[in-house]
Image (cartoon, rainbow, N blue to C red; front, side):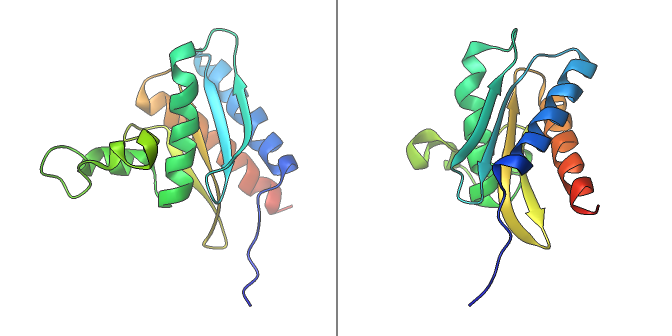
Length: 142
C-alpha cells in the first residue's frame, strides 16, 4: 500500500488567505477555488468585486489542474485546432479549462490538489494561485 499526503481544510485556508492577499496587492478581486487531488472542491471564495462570470471558471481551473496534474496554461498552449489537446475543453461536461490561472499542488511529487483563480488576466490569475501554493509549501517546511 502507498501512503500519500492529503490537502486538509487548514491547508486550504493557508492557500486561500495568501492568494486573497496577493489579489489585493495586485488590485484585482478574484474568484479563488481550491480542490483536493481528485478535483473536488474544498474551498471557494469570491472577493467583493470579482466577476460573477468567473465563479465556474475558477472552480473548473482548479478541477483541471488537479485532475490533469498540470497547469491550465499548459493546456492552453496545446488545445487549439490541430493541437494534441484539441477538444479537451469540452470533456468532463465542459469542466476542463484551457486558460492560465489553474495550478496543481504537489507535495513530495504527489498531487494533493489544485488552485484556480479567475477575474484577472491569465498571468494575474496564475500569480495569485502560485502565491497561495508557495505559502502552503513554505508552511510545510516549518
